[in-house]
Length: 199
Image (tube, rainbow, N blue to C red):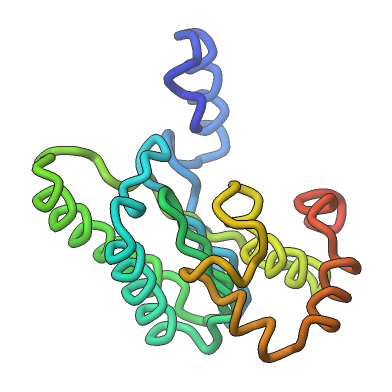
């Protein structure tokens, strides 16, 4: 739905009709009622990808501390995370996905109020919708972990994973070693991310 503002009125009507027919929320990703413990990629972005989180290093650190704390409260495992200037990704395992999403939503509300006050921008929309994607296989898991850790490199903020401070990448590399991390990178490349194995 990021292209909504670029669509013509007929294109918007067609998209809305498809979402209505599938009983999906009109303007946001659906939150599925997954029962039991599963692994998920959770992603959230600032509205129109504005770099609001990235206003300062302190703000990125604040965001990282808050979302990681919530993940530890509502998840069995927090495998990987990455906080960027305009979005974040979390790779977790939980049987309380609805509770976690609700808690992240409350953090989004609190942080929007605080950051808008700091920036003298009352009324600004800070966050777009947060969504979860269930991890479906071991291959999907490792490719997702690579995706999360590679995100700062992909977006051009750093040259190497460990150079981005608001990520679990450095700890992951220290834990598994560079040789094992390189093997995972080669076996589960991002070129495949979101293709056949992800169905």
